[in-house]
Image (cartoon, rainbow, N blue to C red; front, side, top):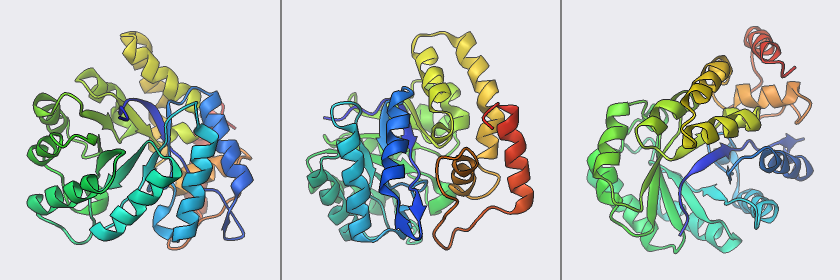
Amino acid sequence: MFELKGAMVAIVTPFTDGKIDEETFRKLIRRQIENGIDGIVPCGTTGEAATMDSNEYEKVVGITVEECKGKVPVLAGAGTNNTKKVIELAKKAQNLGADAILSVAPYYNKPTQEGLYQHYKAIADNIEIGLVLYNVPGRTSVNILPQTAIRLSEIDNIVGIKEASGSLNQVSTIIEGKADNFNVISGDDFLTLPMMSIGASGIISVTANVTPDLVAEQYDAIVEKNFAKAMELHHKLFKLHEAMFYETNPIPVKTSLYLMGLIKEEFRLPLCKMSDNNKDKLKKSLKEMNIL
């Protein structure tokens, strides 16, 4: 069963003239693997999955599996606010060869904690690969409370949670009460070091799209208990982490990759190009990091 750990990237989806740019996407995946990233997470928020149709979803997950096979695991996003639809996506990801799925808490519906439990249990019951919960209350308006995460951790193929609540108290409570085969991973680049210091097993990173080598290096330093180096990298990356949220993710990270000459500057509505003022701020941050 998939083990949730390492420095993983929530990878962007490059577009050209409204379509998925397959050649560029393959290059981005190879760049991540070559720079030490431990896993690829396609079709998440950063990958603009909400704007993909069924065929595009299959294409993106399929390409990722092809490029990663035998190298690093694939944790495919499969989340929406319709349980039946999530199960369909999860089965597609499983059939395409993904190692596990990452499923965001249902947004807009605002389910109760019992509703969240039943939602995730239904998904787990319908797949054989690993299921990773994704808690990001700032996006979903619902918080998977520690007691619910702990309860779900008892289900065999629910293998972990991507925690982006921003609460170290919440993370600590989950880690103290979870089942042994269930891991907690950071969903915030800012919190990789503090979360791993209390028992988290890694990061699913936005910033790694830009600097995969440094994100992987920081993870390795923490695992090796070289906290001086980990802290140095934390502070080195801090302003870049901030820059990735000058506007709604993935606008800044895709704009960064465009400025680096790696993708076209293309988004799908309702996301759009970055404002000129914020783009100037972003350029300044990238130049300070010697990225541009």
